[in-house]
Length: 56
Image (cartoon, rainbow, N blue to C red):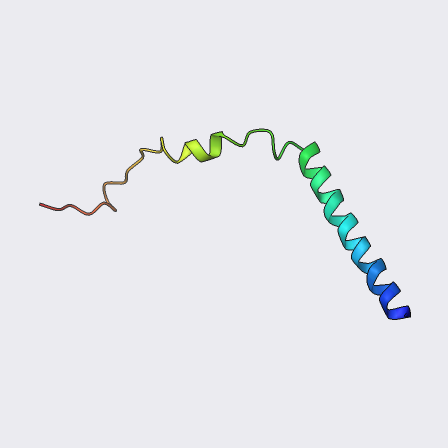
């Protein structure tokens, strides 16, 4: 019985740690702009001529 209580206590501490990390991420602005990173790869037109393969 003592083992079950200890495991429940440890799991609650871990859950509270994840909840704290989530609130910290929201507070620090990690979720402010979720649309731009997905569109950024569509407009990345930089090509490196040394690394590109030429085909005839």
